[in-house]
Amino acid sequence: MRVLVFVVFHLISCSDGNTKLTSDTAKTLEPTNADIVMQGEHFVKIMGCNDCHSPKRMGANGPEIIPELMLSGFPSDRATAKFDTKLIKSGFSIFYPDLTAAAGPWGMSFAANLTPDSTGIGPWTEEQFKKAITQGKYKGLENNRMLLPPMPWINYTTLSDKDVKSIFAYLKSIKPVKNLVPQSIA
Image (cartoon, rainbow, N blue to C red; front, side, top):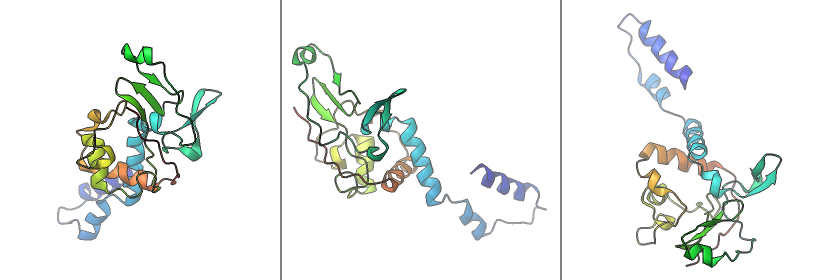
């Protein structure tokens, strides 16, 4: 992207003033799908999506993402643990060791599958994704419940349409993982 900006700047600054950008040149200034996906990957990384939505195993440096399960949410083949309700009733929240599940005063919630599989966001529209991430609506549907903690959707309310589009494009580009995440427990 920096090279493209440099080339355009160079063309404009070195022209005699009579050179005009053609429609072909203007088209090349539009980001490619690869650029959009790369921007989305950047957002997914800096927004910490892998922290909760990717199963992990202990490695030499602590918890490490299991690459083949990246962004697939709480693994459906895991047992849902019984948490210490005394702690929860006193206001504590408790996380599954790899952060893909949490329990607290709201009940028990499980990180969703964000891969493009049919058990994840595969059938979702970009508009549903936008409603989920910026308005906190479960599955991006208007009449559904709100997303449960620890999903920090409130931090994403000001994402631009362009940002949401890039995140969605990236998530649609990754390897689909079949994983039907359990429903939350009240």
